[in-house]
Image (cartoon, rainbow, N blue to C red):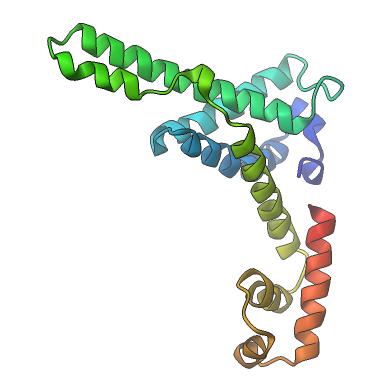
Length: 193
């Protein structure tokens, strides 16, 4: 998904707003979904997205991503993981401070419910969300390359899994058009992904 907007190297140019917008559009859902699945609230997950993008920008300014050290996917995962861990640490700190200022002895349950940042296993969640995000980004790019009718046929017959006969009736197309759109759009999505 990186290469489709000029590559990660394009992000070295701070004034390339188009590349930064493409980066955000491509990865915000991935970062957000991983933060939510890690146990953060919606507001915290939105903060993680913003903080991750800022961290990527700062690292790009300071020399950036080095493909000889890790894959882009792993690099972005590490940055995201650090932002998520920061949020859990903040939660723990706030919970401990509120316990210290409170005489309530039932407060220990609050601290016990906050996961230990070191125990967060995000690798499988990251991989699952990465694959989903990769497919979603490929579909969005291909959607811009084909006619609305072709995409609609593909969407109904493949993504929504409607029977071919139902698609032909709904869209007033013949069976050959359905199979052709499925093949052409599917091939473009595989290529894009």
